Length: 291
Image 1 (cartoon, one colour):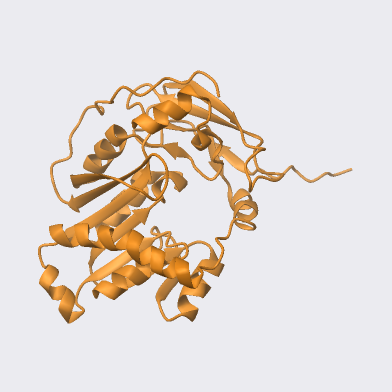
Image 2 (cartoon, one colour):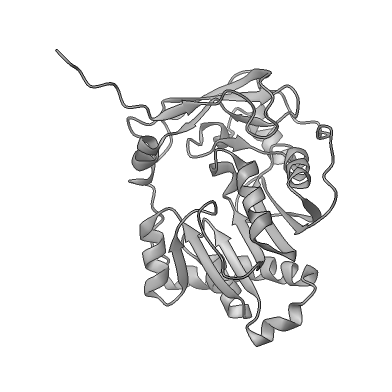
């Protein structure tokens, strides 16, 4: 009697998704079942690896299409309340202001000539805040519900990933706020951003920073939620992220501490610069044997 093959929800990495080296070490394991959004058949445990060459930290596998279908089925963000719309303006306004400081042609903002693409736009806070400043802003998301909500209130949003989206003209700004850690192969996404940007284009990245003091303190107390975050594939550090940006043709310009959530960093980079060889010079992050 024929039986159906079991559905594969995860695909293992064969090498580091940042530098390609296959020499890896086990760093940590974490129980995901206490996560508010966990349910079968999502993984009960995550295994985290560390690359022996570039020191990048990542999970041992990533979701297949079948796994993504399950993952996205119940992880939608709630619609924004009226108060939350205003809060989003206060959160994202300073980010837009910092990016304007490094845009060489920022006076074109008042002519509606500057473009902004927000990858993984979620509820759209950065899209509508950038639009308020005068950018021609577009949000991308792989959750159709998020895209529909933004479109319904008059903002431009596309159901697409950065890997398959097309732009009529080079973009002036691309943002990846809390996105890069969700992409199985971040280098490809950063290379695609490089292709889409204008020669003097700006890239904004935010994600958790495992080198910061609060991360290390959470590890000491065995209370770090990021090890059990089953939507994430990567735990970047400032060192590995800036090194990766340089490998992809970007020059990091500024580093900021984000107040949006614990241990979050924000980096602004510009297109251009010389790719540097070698490995990142990592800070004094803790080595977690098991979580």
